[in-house]
Amino acid sequence: MANNKKIDQEARKEELKRREELEKLIANTSQEITTGVDATKSLLPKRSEHFLDYHKVKHVLDKESTEIVVSIAEFYLDGDVIEKVPYVKQKTKVDQITVSSLLFQMKTAEHAIIKLLGEIDDGNLHPRTFEVLASLQRSKMEIVKHLAQFMIIMENAYKNFQEDYRIKKAETIDEDTEETDEKFRMRGSKQLIQALHRVKENEFDSDSIEQTAKDTKNNKEDGDKD
Image 1: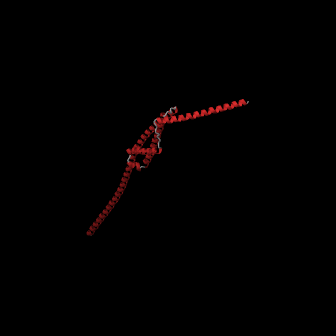
Image 2 (image 1 turned 45 degrees about the vertical axis):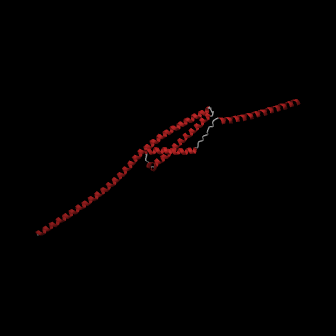
Image 3 (image 1 turned 135 degrees about the vertical axis):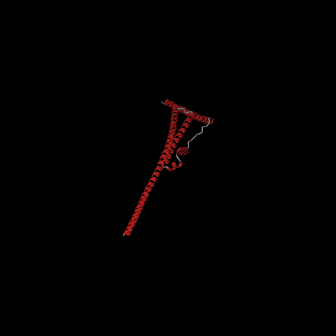
């Protein structure tokens, strides 16, 4: 019984000894790997990290979208129309927001694609990485297509505004002209009626004077006869 207990203690000591040796080997191996990785990094060319300043990008894209919308609007409409007509003014603001959003989505999609390409170049060859890359590329192409379609929609909209504004302006001028003509006709008719009244009164006065003269003459002739 005592011999068995002594054997168990010796086996336990041997096991602990092997465990310590294994832990030292693992620690030394890990240190060697870390040292090797650091040495490899120093030998390989360093990849510059590119971070996207979203606030700066958004500010730049807002400015670009404003220039795009204003250039299209001013190609078909006068600057006074864009500033003074409320509907056109609000339309340009909405178009600027839409174009800015599309440009921002396209820019962020490009940034994500570039990041994934860097991961692939660094050795991340997992199939899922390529699936995500393909999905982002499709999304970017959809954004480009939507942007092109919206540019055509904007162009047609401002072209129609030009024609509608021309027709509306012409109608306003015609209404003002008709109103002026109507006032002139009314004023002319009134003056004509007044003139006719005056002529009639003058004719009545002339007839009265002529009749009085005739009566006076006749009375004189009758007196002479007597």
